[in-house]
Length: 106
Image (tube, rainbow, N blue to C red; front, side, top):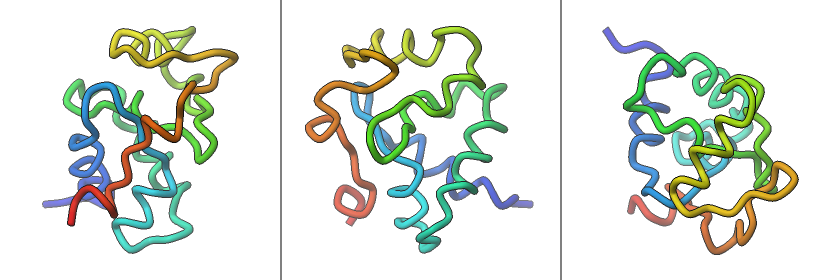
């Protein structure tokens, strides 16, 4: 049986290596504009599943707002391992790296 987070996880698994998306963009794609919090809760609940690249989901300004749930600098390390530059908890070149499910998954 599918739970409320499964659709979110399906989209997050599609975010390409070296790219990032936002809580709001994922919620909007799934028809829940304003459901960014639900996406955040799903990311927080996903940390025991290595198939979900939760580290690629940041806030609408590129900030690593979910960082605390990874422990230490783990979120930043995972992003940097994909070639993403992070300074002061913010993804650099965010607009160029941003992956919009609404535009990419037509």
